[in-house]
Image: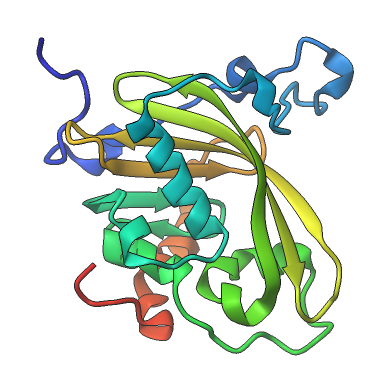
Length: 219
């Protein structure tokens, strides 16, 4: 039977997942939903059962969120993969590595709020955070070319000394070899327009951060 997964040679825009956050995450108990009718809090007991190779994808990516910055975990991505979140747009595995590697100097104490810390977390996990760990995941979609899960990540910054759980919806499109070709991380119900100044800033972050964080060249 022919594979229905996208080819790695297809233009990246055609790989972009367009998840329906309400359909994937809305809780039958409306009191548990945000005003936008999404519930990004994972309920592991309801997680879909997936094959070991899909479990390995989720494990590798949550390892990266938790500060592993390992080449083995990075190999979950195809060479021309895309990473897309509110702060960054990366269009190669090497640029994605730039989000997870390195320890740039943090800004002066008091000059940022928690969201500002989040904007540079993947470029300085060991420096900025005493710990970052995945508290829970819930797989909400598993199809031929897509896996999506809700995730709670707890960040404990070194400088402000408090722990903050952050909920998000992570959606990954896979190629015919099971590699991630598009990784989208949504922090609210809105999808990304890829237009205007915001897209420019996201792309600049993706393009230039490798010069600061210096991931391995062979990624």
